[in-house]
Amino acid sequence: MICRSGDRSLSQIPLWSPERPALHDVVLSSETDQIAGCIGFRTIKTRGTDILLNANFVRMSFAPSIRATTRRRRPSTDSCGHWASD
Image (cartoon, rainbow, N blue to C red):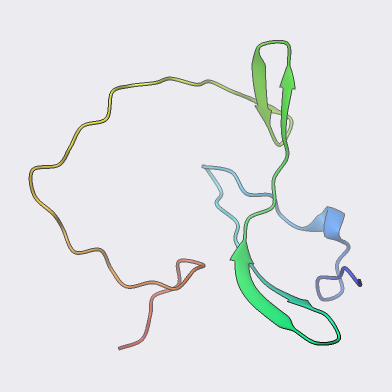
């Protein structure tokens, strides 16, 4: 398997975070098959009871889910969030 991203090392690819949701088009291929998709690269670790996203502390809060009383039509996007053409 060859890992590459254009001319950049994989360690130089921007990581996904809620503030900067960097998504990347990827293609995985073998001798007989190929899969294309969209992915966000990130690291998730724990330090004691702390959760770290891309080496930064993440404050977790939990709230009961609230059901919407009306449904809204969501814009049509592809797997990377790009607007789909009509």
